[in-house]
Image 1 (tube, one colour):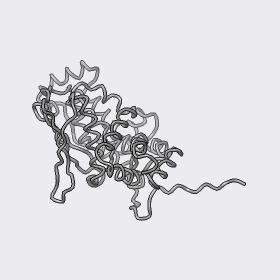
Image 2: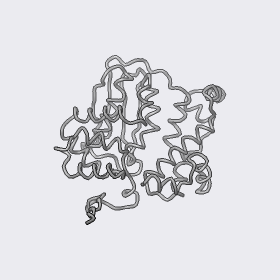
Image 3: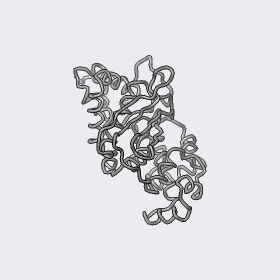
Image 4: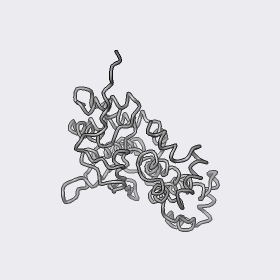
Length: 302
């Protein structure tokens, strides 16, 4: 007799079922890091569901993952830090971050990979001129700001990620709204190093990633960086690239994330990522990823 396998329920009945909510998921390594730190004893039914999804190669919905994060946060900062350090050590997407030599370089690169870890919101980062403190503020992206437990995990990731680049673990202070929910965090170092200017290539990519649909021009971008247009052009050429090449590369990265991580119509993906229309996105997407966006999305969900 063939055993009938019980279908995996991705969502509780009480959870919203909009198209975007159904499609949004976290990277498997992030779910595993939280689950591994929490342990089977404390993970409960959400943990068993996550284990089944991971075992079947299925995505873990953000809303289910949020329940695990809330359970982990109940065990305090040490547990959150352990999960963050495990994620930073195990996820190949973050391997490059571990090689950053200073905070400005690290923060520029974080902006490019951040959407893979919490698609429903982003963070805005501001490093003080002397490198002694970092302000991290939550800003909505595809939804609302994170709930307190998710905000704590984001903070733990920044603490773990910046400790090596700064040479010491920062002090942490919450930035709160009127409702006492954390709107962000201040990380401080007693002996912060002077903050050198980020590499022009990293800075260009970070600026474009924050608003890929903007009409970016070389001269205006150079002004944002405090450089002459020709100076920026020479710096990019020395790195073996150009302003237009980097502009396209970041937009394709954003388009790939939105295609794989959300149920947004592809025309909306094109507009959000800075492409003229769906056809323009498809041409560029196929040339870069080797398949059209529709096929990329189907593959990502299997």
